[in-house]
Image (cartoon, rainbow, N blue to C red; front, side, top):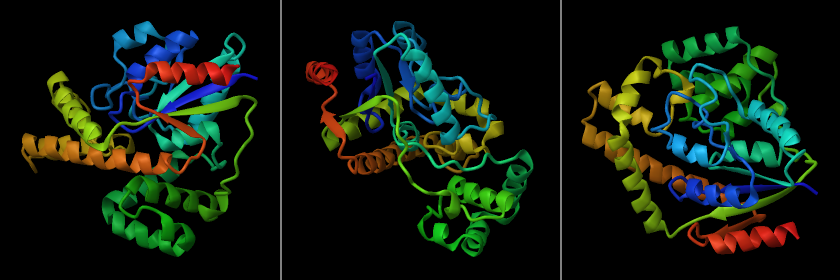
Length: 299
């Protein structure tokens, strides 16, 4: 049976370097599973694979969308399945990698078939968020869908807005579309997790943020600043830089906050991934052990 290898792990762990080695060994392209690296305008702030790295191994879903594009995990699921159907015609195994939990689960388990939001509804809820604020939308969600209200991250405008969009557009609760059923795939899935000691991860994350600054994160943030209200920019790195550009905090504080919020996101990723018993964990420097595990899986 065809095999999809999924190499996952928290931000800053070193997935890119490991996956380049694995992809070259398997002679297969890399399918990216990072929900922000798909945007062409922000390669520095998302630590996207460099042009040099992409020249070594073909990459899919890197810089293939614009910040103003509407894109969802459900759309990603279908796009990747279509791509895999094509790649498996010439490859016995393929490689998917990233740290976006929902994108990985969308491919491996499937995602609930939630309706695509029309432009009018999206504009309406966006206007309500801007004029009324997030707390008002949270209160409205409590009235329209109390079950989802009880579990949603009430500080995450993207989650709250999306649930309300569904309620407005369909006249049904967001909860009614969430069945959480696992879909069967016509290929085998083998998950490989990468992790390091916590202090090592902290050090790597802190340094990576400094590297982003040296590479031009400030200039990149200035370039996309006119679009700062988009959900696609509601992410670590840009939220903090926008506060700096708005003269709310100095650059040094923005850097500190990016480092802190990146470490927090890393812990959130690991908590999510650790719930999956199908993941076999490795230190990313143990590439020989990873290759041996892949070889055994293919026998």
